[in-house]
Amino acid sequence: MFFLISQLTGGFLLAHVVTYNHYSVEKFPYNTNIMSNYACLQLYTTRNMRPGIFVDWLWGGLNYQIEHHLFPTMPRHNLAKVMPIVKEFCVENDLPYMVDDYFTGWKLEIQQFANVANIAKKMKSKIM
Image 1 (cartoon, rainbow, N blue to C red):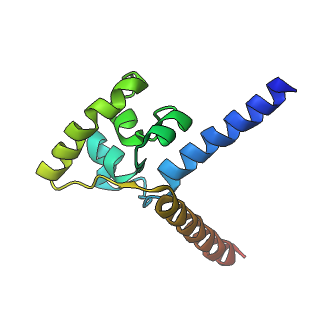
Image 2 (image 1 turned 30 degrees about the horizontal axis):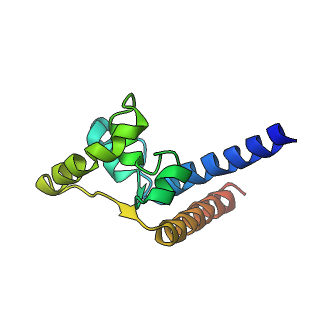
């Protein structure tokens, strides 16, 4: 029973982190210029959740998703340390640094799901 509960809870939290960080941002076509710039791709397609003691603990440091994507091999406990450096880089280069509270990111995530559903509906009607 412990194994089942821990796997379900862990799986839910991991899925929640991934959808919050990745599905609450704009999507780009495969052939756009952004795909050729690694740093810009990570900054435009990833959102962080505002850090805090509870959020850092619950999400295991993956609320620093921008830093995790820019530095994928960096240990999670160091992601918070590079966050100010990444923010400064973004300001200096006029790049977005998207970090929001839980409810703002969740709302944007739901809006993005609705956008994808509308596109799928339009594509389905063209096929039929």
